[in-house]
Image 1 (cartoon, helix red, strand yellow):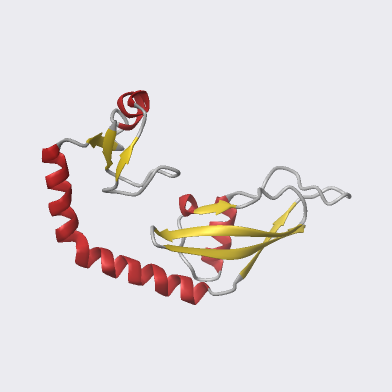
Image 2: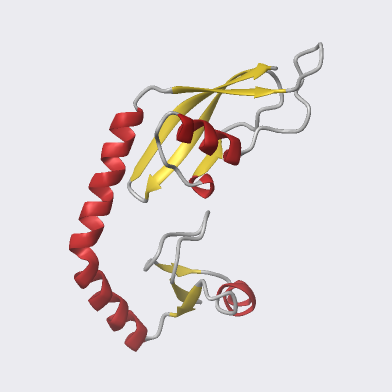
Length: 147
């Protein structure tokens, strides 16, 4: 089943992408949640026209994402958390904590755009991926330290 995404869906695609999904996933989740519409010929034409009209705005958004990635550069963010004597942390380090740490450095990144390659379980250095735009991804270092 082909659907047109109305907004970004992590692991599936970005807004206005035409993707193939299993019929049950499309009918029972994506369409009722308002995340997608069926890719009929009329909907495809409407999306093409919307994309044409939004091309200029999309270029500006991409440029802003590239500028943000350049400003962030090789930043290392420090997250303080409670940890045991062996270095194992209590709880977990979340994208929200990384987002707040970036905000303290003057960078506004939505927590939903942050993911970890490996979930932090110990004190140490980890890599977080910032999904700033569908064509602009940026990695930052997250240093998890004990309080």
